[in-house]
Length: 566
Image (cartoon, rainbow, N blue to C red; front, side):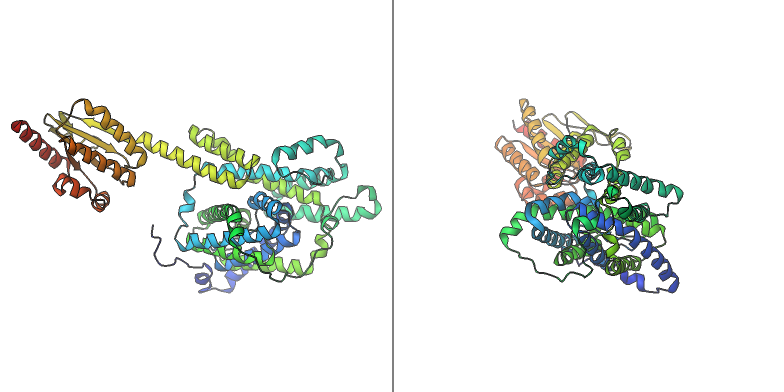
């Protein structure tokens, strides 16, 4: 990985426009229109669930979606607000207000651009899968929890943001269920779930909104007792003008306060966008420039806060809708943003009529699709360490918040990974005879090891955990003082500072006791580290051998020589 190489920025739009023709435009136009229609209810629902107005959800989808398609590294990625951000955005607004959210989103955008500039696009993909599944499932349950009030028409205000107190309030107010509101929610759910069974191209969420909104509007005057709360009732008349950009007040105190939230937004956005791009590449056969994608996502998140927008990332469902409807270039994503803009400018009065229970049904289906319960069932057959990471990340996401879940989940995964490496790294001791072909398919070749020569083989990386293990083995073998210690390192791919320090201390203590140390099978990279640390000067350059046969020959000679002198 090269952190200081040239900037890896290759927007997918530029090569896509070379040789662009009417046939491609026609496919992109159809896909862009369909995705724009599908994105409409999701943008509105995600905006409301995040604690902002439907207008902000649409503004985010328009500006963010345009920038992700125009500047990103994936040909078919569709950007916008997603369900994954609902929890963190809601918590940031509750704690720091809309201004705090804007600053955190801006900082997250800067972090994402930095990740792309420093070629870290591929590193994000190495975040353990159980962590991704754990916090995605936790987010899904949290989203579901936030919709109970609107779905059942409980009419509660001041609902706690914490999971357990929230459900406590719900359970204590079940007697306040509004039957007309519940009926609207149930009918909406049925339409959303049954529409794909009629045709997979039917956008269930949009159909539910159109049909249910029409029915509620028609019955509103004739049957007032059936009236249910709508977007207009809660938010008033929605504006139809693009907000003017406003400034952000950045200072060190605010940056320090919001940095953990910004980091969470950046990591979550990077994971979701690159995961979406990876899925898209598997379907289309294209290749996403990961670093470019992160830069594009970062720019989108830098710009949208100035217009009051919420975090932007790649959306898997909308990206797959784009692909299945023929979209193959970023032009489709640009068209999707234009479609949303036209709806925003000319159809917002109709959005006021949408029932809140209908949007709750849309988000409940989103939460179910996000939950990944089939994946969780599969992971339950994996090693206990994977299950532990998933369970801890899930519980922390639900009970506390996503920032803590990601931080502790990553820490736990790192600890378990190091434990696995330590368990799989072996340190063997030999004396008398040594089969130098052991562990390979070559014919056995046994070397005679002279009396007073001990051979220790390290099989795995020589890092801080193994260094301690090696030191303990050395102390245990002090009962019989050897003349020469051979440390065989043919299977050591790298050595860290602790390993170098441990080796240096061993050599120095061995020298004081009159014990010679010979290193064998040191690969060029490890040797470079040892030379930089001065190990070659400490034991002598001739005591670092490239093959065990030479190391044993040298050790045997030293042992026999010292025996004669004695």
